[in-house]
Each structure stands twice: as structure tokens, then as C-alpha cells.
Length: 263
Image: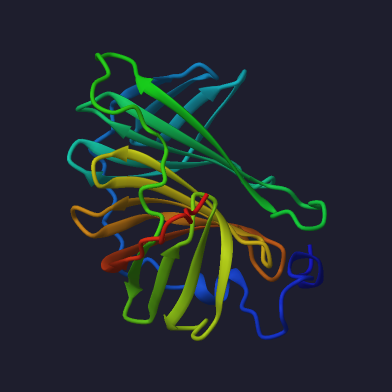
């Protein structure tokens, strides 16, 4: 797929995914091999997902499909892990699981690419599944959609060459603005989802309209760290699952005057 079709609605000066994603994992937390030897079963009303992690990779099974792939696991909070695996590289299908072995809560984010979306729709899509890790009694809050970030303003420093500010406009959209880096001066409001995972920890995914890029991140405001990935297409049409991670600095919170309230 060519740049003409993947970025047909973007301004001429707009950057490709590979332009801004190169090096955007400079402040990312390191991966871990602590989960090797574990077999996880995530149960929800929608599906059951099994993952068996070995030195060779991650064997997965869900929705009458199965396979084995390389994976990445990162401890993003105490006993809490980000696990990312590419299910089908040709179709841009990935699975990202967030599991807490203390509360036995879990959320899975399925992402995929739509190669010829209808006008006005994004090429990258999210599907969120809230469940529990089999083997323990779930406790604490049940993860779910949240408006907690609405009105918050923060700077995300991904590396010495990547700094962005985020403003969470409402429960459906957020605004990014590049302060330093390849996209300096560029800004856009994008479709987004926010899920509260536990106190001061959120799952955040956005979908860009102008270019074929989507993300999913674990936002840990206790440790001031963001950990996740960018899924999308490079200029030559190749599909990429690029890592990202940032140090978070909160700036302020905007409060809406009565009688107005963001959706």
C-alpha cells in the first residue's frame, strides 16, 4: 500500500509513522522475563484467552484460533504487567494484555488495521475486553471506561528528542501537540479511549484519523511512567508494531464551569 492511500487526507508536511516513532521508546521501562514458565487464562463474558510463556515465545489461544509468536512483557506497576504479542503481522492484528496478579484483574486490547476504511473513519481499531485472571479471587475495582482524565494536561517526554503535551478533552477525544521532535508544532485531536485499571493507573488508546496509526498505553501516574506501543503502517505500506514509553509530568487540570460538562 502506498503513501498516497495510507495518508491521503494528511497535510503535505505531515510526518509518517516511522518519522516520529524512531527512538520514541528512549524512556521506556525495560522488558522482563519474569513471566517465563507461566500459563495465563484470562476469562471474560466475551471470550477466554490463554497464554503460555516460554523461553521460545508466547503460545496463545482464543476465538478458535491459536499460534505462537514472540512477545514483550513489561512490569508497569507492582505485580502488574503489559504483555504484547503480534497475532497476524500481515493483517496488523495484535493483542495487548494488562494483568494484575495481586487483584487478578485483567484487560485485553485487540487492535487491527482496516486497509480501506470508510471516509471519516480511522484505519486502526481497538476492541477492549475486561476480564479476570483465572487462579485467584478478583478484588479491587473492576476496570472500565473512565472520565477521570478529562480536563487533565500533561507533558510526555519519550526521549531527549521526543516531547509531547496531552490534553484530555473528554471521554472520547484528546489533543496531542509536539513540543520537541520530528513533529514539532504539529497538533491534532484524536479519537481515544480511557479505562481505569486501578487507582492512579489507566489504559489509554488513541486512533489517528489522518495517518494509519493507533496506540495503547499503560499510564502509571504514581510512578509517572507511560508504557505502550504504536501500531500502524510505514510509508512503504509495511505494518509496524513500534514500542513507546515516556516520563509523565502533569501540568494542570481544567475544570468546566457550570452548567457545562464534557461528554
